[in-house]
Length: 309
Ligand code: MN
Image (tube, helix red, strand yellow):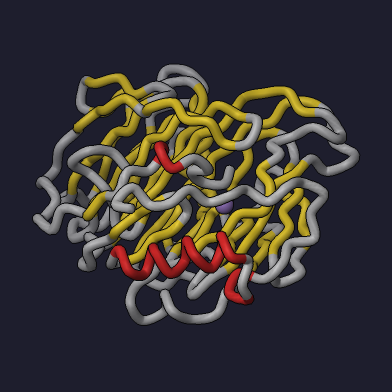
């Protein structure tokens, strides 16, 4: 749940500056990537759609089986210019970071790490949990206003929930159905877990774009079926989204105001220019002060030179 840990995972990309489509249902396949000991299904970024609001990365990981001492096992690695949002639907993971945070996360809880100018973290086995592990890790691109700022870490043990006709919505970030998450939000966006058992109608904002990722089960949107391993991009211009749910389904709704800044992504870095990425790469390679130290038993993950070298 850490983002790409090989250079090949994240070719340098600049977000398309154009306006998102109007209301649509564009379903695209995720691609498989390796993160630590896990194979993940990466729904974002993808060609032609680098961001949904400020959401710029989405890895559905698991289900897989972990033990007390063998889990996700993503060793210390750096980030800049983004927030990592970790959400589990099964299992437990231990987060450690260079601020000294050490936090086990369980289903229903939120880990939100802000990289700003630089932070490093690891994702590890807990030392006590054994069993199934499944979840999603998302990245939010930070705006110019905060992306050079300090790193930070938040853990939220409880999040607001809204009852829907066909299930329950848990608000991870932002506001949805009159419920507001306490988590930090640097740009107008929303992230919602949907635990559905029947047809539902989601209240949306017409001036935001949205996408859905199904983690378990399946749902129908406008006659199209959305199942795990795919991204359903919905465009904007909707005040309500009808979901045809005929089996238990777990999904994540991502939305936000179209992100106005061109984003350059490389490895675990979200920036604007190659020079910024080069600086971060050198700092991690040279182990200078920028990213600090993570007290982890796992080996640190070496950076590969950016592709333009
Ligand atoms: Mn990470």
